[in-house]
Image 1 (tube, rainbow, N blue to C red):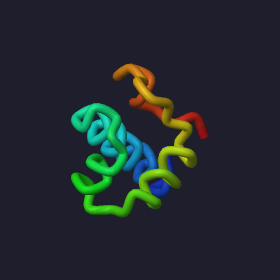
Image 2 (image 1 turned 180 degrees about the vertical axis):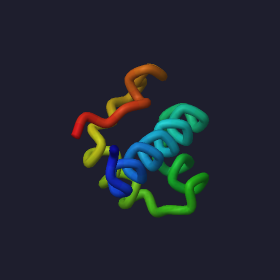
Image 3 (image 1 turned 30 degrees about the vertical axis):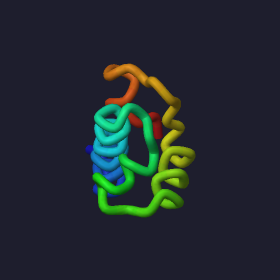
Image 4 (image 1 turned 90 degrees about the vertical axis):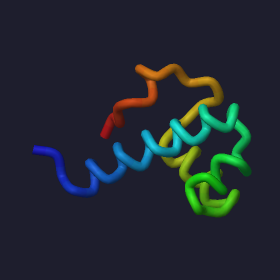
Length: 64
């Protein structure tokens, strides 16, 4: 059974990826969509190892 923390991270990563795709990978626009700062989205992109142009299958799981 996954921990609550892991489930939240998976959900958060997915939402960040969706926002980035919808904004054509413009971080400032994606951050506004999510209601967070550009600095915060940059931190979370690094935290989750998100790379520009990631495919849908690549963005759906977290290896932890």
